[in-house]
Image 1 (cartoon, rainbow, N blue to C red):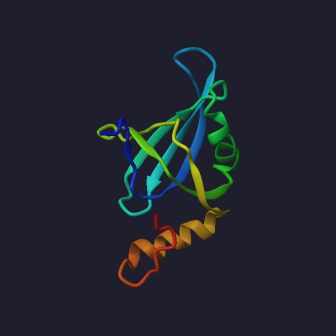
Image 2: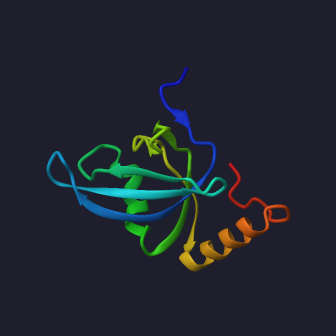
Length: 119
């Protein structure tokens, strides 16, 4: 059995904010929301870690653009924690308003909306 469970849906980035790390320095807390389940997930990206290259461009755009990502693994499914070492893939990036409109239509009309962000 794999060490980490694959997250079987794309997520969109709700926000990314800097926080003080309990180990010293600054980290970025990234809040994510599942496209299908609307489950809220979190991860922490540290500019000092090797995995920063996976998150740097996402963090840089997170609070100004709408971003949908996938290929994530859960570190702790019960706590909804995403493994920051996941090999993140950006599925869509554009205006936040466009993403909000797409998601609203999708959530309000599940039967006829084409699954734009299908995994």
